[in-house]
Image (cartoon, rainbow, N blue to C red; front, side, top):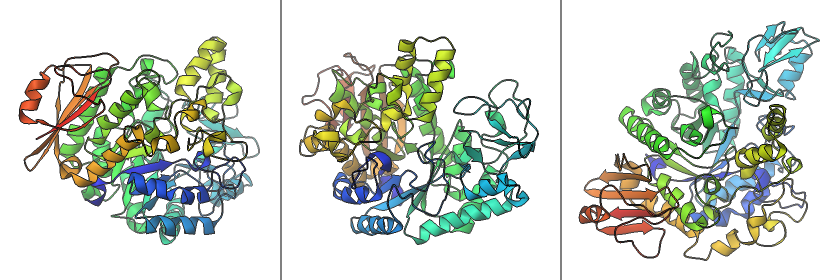
Amino acid sequence: MSFHNEVVYQIYPKSFQDTNGDGWGDLAGITQRLDYLQDLGVRYLWITPFYPSPQRDNGYDVADYCAIDPRYGTMDDFDTLVREAKARGIGLMLDMVFNHTSTAHAWFQRALAGDKHYQDYYIFRDGGKGAPITNWQSKFGGTAWEYVESLDKSYLHLFDVTQADLNWENPAVREELKNVLRFWKARGALAFRFDVVNLISKGAFEDDATGDGRKYYTDGPHVHEYLQELVHDAGIDGMVTVGEMSSTSIGSCIRYSNPAEHELAMTFSFHHLKVDYKDSDKWSLMMPDFAKLKQLFADWQEQMTAGGGWNALFWCNHDQPRIVSRFGDDKKYWKESAKMLAAAIHFLRGTPYIYQGEELGMTNAGFTNIDEYRDVESINYYKILRAAGHSEAETLQIIGERSRDNSRTPMQWTAGENAGFTTGTPWLAVNATHTSINAEREANDPGSIHAFYKELVRLRKELPVIADGSIAFLERENDDVLAYERTLDGKTLRVLCNLRGTETKTATPLADYRKTTPGTLLGNYPEEPRDTLRPYECLVLTN
């Protein structure tokens, strides 16, 4: 299919490019940088929410689905962006936050005012003053229920208290959301990304004796019929769509993304980004379990392939730390590990996503004080961790490694003031690494991380084996090396990635791999090794 050989670039507009000096990125800034994106070769731009919002959750708390927040510009700016992107062969993928709205949304405000019609747009339950309706926990910490004194009711918020969950059982809600898709499709959107869309169908509202409640709302009882109805009635069947899947399963994602189901084109899953969570807790640090990472890749790749599903491939996004700081080495082997991690997923079966600055090797923020953070989740968990007895130093280390603000520091365009992002005061501090890591420095360097990503995008377009070949995993018992081969019509690619910062041998000697795939398609070291993989080395062999 058309999107199998394409790459999506994610833009967090607040941090991408500011054109008016207010320290806040805008739509005009994206238009200004389209030539850069065209040169990189990406086909779609996933733009995170730019709708009116109190910004409690950086735009994922939407107050109006069919308008532009003035801080990002105007509808004319959007129309210009659509037109200019189209002229460069680029389509826009808009972010649809349909599990919840901001409590500032007109629907919720009418519900608070006592309007029964709009109260049924949300999940209100009688009571809850003395104790929450259920013991479900918010993803951002604390109870998932908020009591409203004036109504003597509580509403569900699986995320922040200002993000009230919508009631998808109400047909009027589903029709409202179809109209949102129709609106943006008519304005030129070519693709859609759906935020935490597998949470839209809630099951029983009961206490969870063994967890935080997610088993009652994850991949819920009516989620597939709701998605099929939404896609069909809004007229987006056949468009490029991707669903963000929270705590999902392979079986569910096969169904979400199998073309025969007419739901989504592909799915995001996050299991591979939890292999450094101690006891499944994001805020408990441990070294990455690469054996588990390899097994997860193999399971998802093989089973999704067998079931007719399609993966979205990614390391980074606006909610994740920078991967080179997380699974690589952002100091001694910065360039080598950034390239290796890129190769590791770009040759997998699925559609790769590049998050802004990933193609430059941008690193974690390096903040040293909680006052430097803006992310509501990070600030909440700072308080939770301190209350749990962690020292200030321990807490800041944990937040420093896990905070979503790591990915939200402004895009590093130049080595100059504010990294070329703004002439004003940036809403979030610029990473100090911008003096050495920036687009201006890397764009014309053939050995740069940027050049490596550009080559990955080009190869996917040119080699059908990457887009549509079968996949088989190699080196399964070797925890140090992620290895797999792709085959199609007699063409074979073997991808070997050393996940460690030390030299390592492959279980099958490299000489044996070279007998049947003697050509080197790509690597991240200037010379090929004889019988070992060097620290964070990647090697792509072909016949």
